[in-house]
Every structure is written in structure tokens, then in C-alpha cells.
Length: 430
Image 1 (spheres, helix red, strand yellow):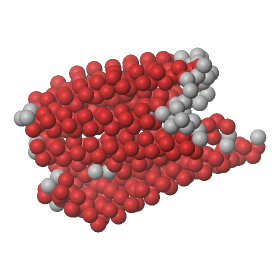
Image 2: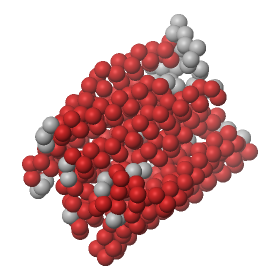
Image 3: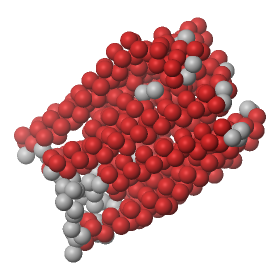
Image 4: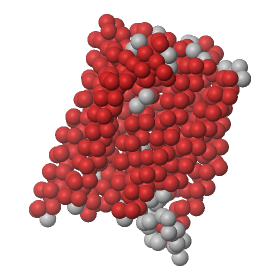
């Protein structure tokens, strides 16, 4: 028999269940976003601009391969309402992809010319990201089973523990590699101590209800479906990091240390966007599978609109208080880049609209068009960066990032509109 739900956990497909999941997802992402912001504050205050730049380089270096290893398996698992593939297939593919990418990244560090501090910090960030990819798939279990409370607790614990350990290590005189090593160990502990056992306990609930049994899908078939999504994640990471690569190449690591913290100021806003989108992804998938174009359209555009509104609010706040926030958080050197910060916020607002649009396309299994969205955005960001970064510095990089985000958001919205039109025509014909 299925394990009875507690009175405080309404079914995930009810209004109360969706609201509860949004609350937990929002709380976890807000806490995690705040701790990522605090982490850069700690690095800037207890370290220096060079430490911030090295940390930013490590994130930019490891992000594209690691997000490709994700293959968007969490979203695919959470929205697999027809049980095309079993859990063991998803988990096996995640392990193999993460192992290959982790070994490749660690081996490639022999080619990095930046000193032992940069190399070792990047190595530990690679290990931390490997743990994160496995936790990410377990988050898909929480999402699919409507238990975003587990997600919120895990993410909050991972963020608070990370910033606390980094602060303690640096305050005690430790170097950046020791700090990132402590962070990697904490992420591994969260994985084995909370995420994996909690997900293992959840899955039999739905399996016994006939929703998690055997599936005919093989790992080869899952690779065929997931590879475009891994490419999408890779392109999305490149899209966001293109201006940072140009900053590091043209202006140096210290300038990258000034530029990256401004982007991280938007992580709290992205938490709201995720909280709005993730809990409704299974509902979008069900509407799409049922051919309910009206319900799909209404829900998809509602989430996109709320993301865009949140981004617009962020731009207003940045224009009014951006210089003060940068000065208080990081220091005078960062406050001098307030003009660039405004364009970073504009790019963030466009990203807040783009993320739920892509989520809706994924829920409808409209996958193969998504790489073209990001290729277009990358091309715009790269051309604009090459033109503006050498002449306008960090402000040019921020403008280039916003231009790429506009290209991606506009093309994604156009494709979503076309998808909904096709669903409507198909429903009328049927």
C-alpha cells in the first residue's frame, strides 16, 4: 500500500499542494541565492579581488562541461508523466556522464596557466560540481513527487554550510584552495546524508501506486532524447559566460573579479523564477500530454509574465540603489562599476523571462528547437562582446550579455507561441 501523506503535505496536483511546493522551492532558492551572494562578499572582504577572480574563473571554466553532463535529466525525469524511462536508467546515465566530464576537467587543468592557487581551486570546484550534479537528479525526484520541502531544505543547508566553511577557513588564514575543498566536502556530505536517502525513500511511494514501475526505455534511447537537452544546457552556460570569457581575455582576472559579483547579485531573483516554474512543470507536462492547449497556454504565459515582471522590478531597484548596494556589499572598487550593473540587471530581467519559456518548451517535449535558441543568443553575445569589451570595458560586457539575453528570450517566446498555436490547431482537427 502507498504510504499515507501527512496532513501538512497536500497532494502536489492540488492548488494547496502547488502553493506549498512554490513556497518551499522559493525559500530554498532564496536562501541559496543569498548565500552565494554572501560567499562572494566573504571572498572580497577576507580575500581580495584576485581571490574573487580566481573563484569566478573556476566557475566559468567548469560550468559548461558540467551542465552538459546534467543532460537536463532532472527536468526530463520530473516531467516524464508517461514513464518512458525508469529511475535506474536516469541515475546510470547521470553517473556515467558526470564521471567522464569530471575526469576530463581534472586532466585538462595541466593546461591552465594561472598558478597553483587557481588550478587547485578549480579542481575542488570541479569535485563540488560533480556532487551537485548527483544531488540535482535527486531534486527531480522531489519535484516529481511534489515534495519540494526536501529540495528547499537541501539547498538551504548546502548554501549556508558552504559560506560558513569558506568564511571560517579564510578567517583562520587558509587559502582559496582549502576553502573550496571544504565546500566540496560539504556538498558531498549533503548528497550522501540527505539527498540520496530521502529520494530513495520517496520513490517506492509512487511505484506502489503504479506510477514508478518498469519502463521499456533503454539508456541508449534516453541518451538520444537527453543529448539535445545536454547541448542546450551547455549552450546556455556558454551564453551566460561569453562576456566573462572576453573580460578575462581582454581585461584580466582582476577585472573578471569585479564583473562576476554583479551577476551573482541576481541569484536571489533567479530563485523566485525557479520557484514559480519548477513546481508547475509536471502540470505543464500533463496539459501537453493531454492536448489541453488552453490550460497549457494559460499556465505557461502566466509563469513567463511573472518572471518578466520580477526582472523589471529588479532593473528599477538597480537603477535606484545599485551603486549603494555594490559599495556596501563589496567595496568602493565595485561601486565604481554601477553603470555596468544596470545593464547586468537588464540582462537578468530578460533571463527571468527566458527561463520559464524554456521550461514550458521542455514540458511539451519541444526539445530539438532549443539548441537553435541558444546558438542565436551566443552569436549575438559573442559579436557584441568582441565589439564592446575592448572599447567599453565592463560596461560593454554587460551590454553584450543583455543583447544575448534579448536574442534568446525573444526567439524562445516566438517558438512557444508557435507551439501553442500548433497544439490548438491539432486539438481542433482532432
